[in-house]
Image (cartoon, rainbow, N blue to C red; front, side):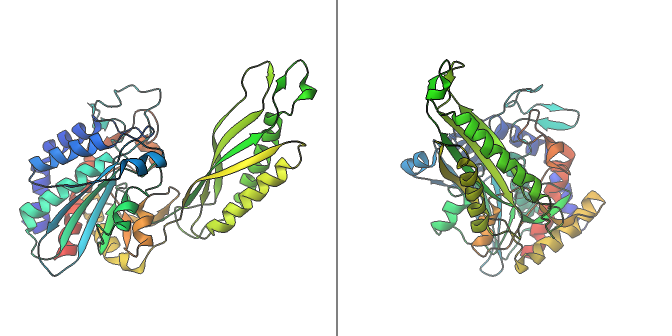
Length: 408
């Protein structure tokens, strides 16, 4: 048997154990908000210890987490050093996830298996890669027995809010500086670039009044409607701006939440909405934010008495490929082709992730892991999120083989 075949065989022999590990991870909720993620980190560390893997627990100070809008974050690092020479390769997956919402036909925290898939919130994004990365590492040590380099597992809990208290915190505190990194992703493509994201909260102020005498008030909802129409007009114009990165099309804007008013018989005095503006890699985030602010201000000025407060919630830069990622891309494409029997394309994604924080720190990285061809197929952020178990098995093999090559 080749070493690759031996790695594959080890993963096959331990796959039931890998599935059980993933089920146990799914069964501990990590809904963000509210963002009480420390219990999941504790449980993960316990399970890793059963495999002989000691996880360092790096708790972000409570006040820092509270000020950020979450409840608790403990990030984990597992360090495995095999020799003084060679690369350090980090594998990062995030445990925080949006709440399950409605419409589930399976328990969102059950880890149930049906029709060859494992169901549950974060089953695909990205607790599946807690499992694939952990078992790829175990296979590497059991079979390849590397004598050079190091592998680190980074299991972090701030992707949904932007990553600043996840990978960003670990990097800022000098707790890690790998040479290369692979972050949780899907199995049929290796992602080398992604969109940026600007999120803002817009508060439109008017003046409350009794609906029987509306002229005594200033309708904040009418003011907000003009602003929203102006923003949606911009969204149409964005379709004319195209990216040269395969897998990424054009910028776009989404209004994801809106609330306001006090009752049906009251002229609304305040309306609040939140927007999400996705930026293609070619765009300048500073210019994008300035443009959005101007569109909002100009539209608000059309309504007498309306004032607006704008608060930036998130500014996540796009991920641009670093030249040093070639060994990662080459290895994943080679083994992806062998294991999946089809080419694994290197491309961009319209998502934004916390991988950008590694790249901004000068660490070449890519996105690859266990999952289907599209976010839509995974049901990520929707009901009945799932990972196909055969994708999990094969992605684990690709990652184990890739680590074997990188540490050779």
